[in-house]
Amino acid sequence: MPKHVLITGATGLIGLHTAKALIGRGDKVTIFSHSLNSAQRKIPGADKYVKWNSEDEKDWTGYLEGQDAVIHLSGAPVMAKRWTGPYKTEILSSRQNSTHALVKAIASLDIKPEVFICASAIGYYGTAKSGETFTEKSPAGSDFLATVCKVWEREASIVENYGVRRVSLRTGIVLDLSGGALAKMITPFRYFAGGPLGHGKQGFPWIHIDDVTSIILLALDNKSLNGPVNLVAPEKISMNEFSSTLGNLLNRPSWLKVPAPLLKILIGEGEETITKTPFVKPEVLENFNYKFKFENSGQALKNILQKT
Image (cartoon, rainbow, N blue to C red):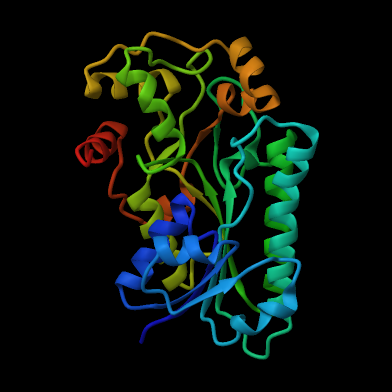
């Protein structure tokens, strides 16, 4: 039997791949989107396309009826702009308010979805000292992005009070050329200007987009998966090591580091999320015996680069 699945943020990198995978396997997908034209163009074949504003619950709550699952991936892009006061407010409120609205709407339903899958990020752990490794059992950090993730997950967890299973996806750096960090990193490498950001000793907790999609489908289908899940590959690798691997595969040097002070000038407070990224272990997935499609960065990058 096909599942009925509602997705927010479906035109983003992760949402796009997830929606297409669900449609491809025969599920009935409802897309909540701020831009219906964009959603219809990028994701043909969905069951319904609904104009979505989280503040107008009366306009969309009815579409939650009959859904087996809600996958909530919507939120203002973290690194799209410099972290000014107003943009930090937008980053937080876009996640807190939309998650709160969805959970509140779910609470009002007579028949509730079986699972609520909500985005989060490895930013939950905050910035890290050199060499620290975090699992799902590790405490939250105290910086801005950690605070955002804590609020985000707290709002999502309220759905458990209504008998709905909740999965929070603490996503790392997603590898795909259609968006995300890799798409931005690869251009300077092609022009012989690539290299690590900052000192390079920080973690680079990555995951291939195909594994992201597979894990979301796993979270959708398997009732024993719940709570926070680190979406990162098992490989423990530094920014230096990742940059070197990328440079070798492109036959380009990887020695041109971008120093932290320059990053601070360019992107402001968000610099520390890049230069002090923690090492993160996917302990829940490993205990679950999930078989990663891509376990090392060289293998993952070869697969992605051969598509260009």
